[in-house]
Image 1 (tube, rainbow, N blue to C red):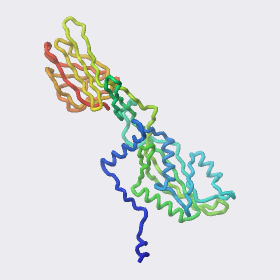
Image 2: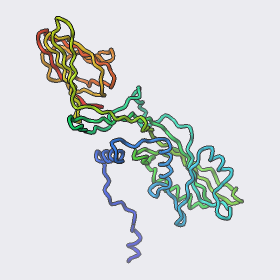
Image 3: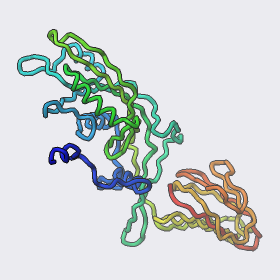
Image 4: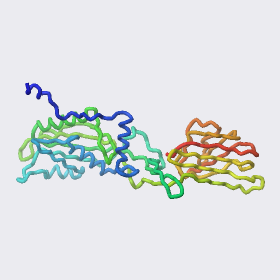
Length: 354
């Protein structure tokens, strides 16, 4: 009776429920930023190399054990692979070739990546708000904007070879690879960043009689990592204040009042208030200190038309906002309004930093 029950027993069932949908996406985001800081860890090419090597050595990845002994994995550059294939340094204490072993070779020709589904980065090497941190200087509240650039997508190709003199070792490793990549890709974590690893091809390099007239097999697996580079040298921390008032005085005898421009930046968003006083000038220009996307135009008083020009290009003309107005740091923004000469003209732009 016990033999019948034991036949179907399994001891590797994962009973921990896996998160899916929005909860899984939030879990990934938390993992990227889970390093005790407000910025994610950077990613360089050597970090991706190390993570691929770790994936092949990991028991949850492609690790191979023979007779209870873990098969060693040797990481080589293409040049060292050529040298290694001629010298065969893997040997035991008696200088005999010791099988099995696995080699990992990274091809040097790194390609432009497809991690972003073939989309290109926005030109200009801009940085974008990743996190907003409230601050307090003892007098005034504010926020610090932690900004990072768009990652640079890269495709990196790897060759994994299994050297063995036993067909059962080859079968075991092939089964592990096929199960791991049954949906073509597996995800690896590079400094907390999830990246897909694709299997491109499986090819054998044949049965060879070479090691001291010993027969052995070489099985080749080609992988492509859809990764990206995120250089910490490009990260920025931009202190901002909670509230500032910029007043423009117009020195003309006819125009006796002024224009008040009041930008409010906080954790909850950005509000720009424009107040064109009676008999004041009807346009002025300012330089943006932030990257902001405005989605609402509200509280329009005594104004029949608003024209917004960014870097010499008109991007809004009217009083109804249907598409976001996006301004970036150091952009030159010109505001012109049409209002009665003896009345105040007021409006507000509502949005958030990006």
